[in-house]
Length: 179
Image (cartoon, rainbow, N blue to C red; front, top):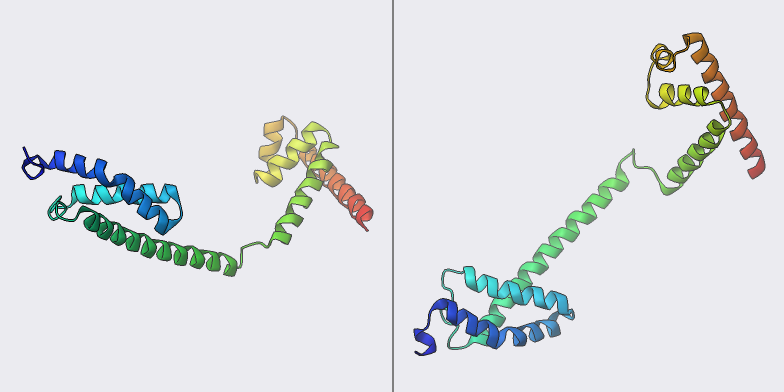
C-alpha cells in the first residue's frame, strides 16, 4: 500500500515522525528558544490535525506546508503578545493613576507604624490588647467587646486608654531614637 493510499492517521504519523525534528530545529533558529520551538511545532501539527483539509497538499511539499502553517502561528503569537503587552501596560498605567494607589514610601511608613503598634501592644496586658484589637481592627462596639471579654464597658474603656497610651509612648520613644 502506498503512502497516498494509507489512512489519514497513518499519513499524519509518518508526517510527524519524518518532519517534527526538522520543524522544531527550524523554529528554534527563528525563536532562539528550544521550549517555544517545541510548543510551536506541536501547535503546527495540532493545527493540521484539526483543519478540515488535513493532509491535503502536505504530500507534495510537506516542509513548505509545515513552515507556512508555523509562520501563521508565529504571526498569531506575535499579535497575541502585542495585545497582551498593551493590556498589561494599560493596567499598570491605570494602577499608577488611581488616587488610592499607595507609593512604596507610603507602604513602608504604614508597615513601620504597624510594627510600632505591635511592639506597643506586646507591653500591655492580654485583655487590654484583645480589647484594642476587637474595637479598632474588628470594628466592634465597646459593649460587644465588653461582653466578649466578660468585663464591663467601663473596663473596656480603661483597657483602650491603656493600650492607646502605650502606643503613643512607644511611637514617641521610637521617633526620638530616629531623630
